[in-house]
Length: 223
Image (cartoon, rainbow, N blue to C red; front, side):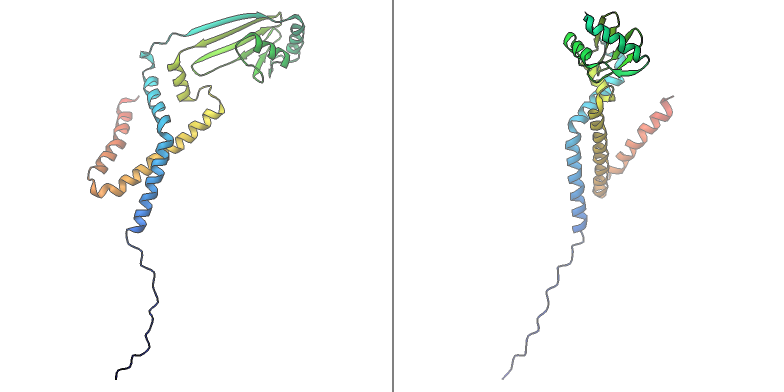
């Protein structure tokens, strides 16, 4: 009669990691970063690509600036205040007094509260640069006030947005964030191409062409 001895239990061992698992996970992360950065860049990339064309061909794009000029007279009580303020702030760059700024806002289509003005004994000059145009306000101590606004059209506006000209801090921050997203988009795209290069023989020649072409053009044709 055969007796059955005690059975020996073999502890379960964790399944070994598959050789391609780490590579697949890394590639998945690259694809995720790539599509997220591309989604962030999409609209801005189209905008900056279009304005790159308009900037490069600015001499061929006709612009007809529209100029608006308005005049008004500062009330007598405010005139005395302006004259005294001008005498106390010659060659300074400080905002208009609040009462005079409120009057300017009511008299002209502009908001000058908190904007620095250039002061002299004769007047206060407020520069109001803007994307796609320009504007300024001048108030003299004799009470004469002039406002001028120049609009160079929407193409000029887009070009200034491309350059970040007179667009303010928020848009400047947006351009920086957009640039970082573009770097991530390009780097992750390059790494994805590197992983697929073995099955796509044309990958490295095309990448090399994309690197060499602008360098050759810059060396040979840019002086």
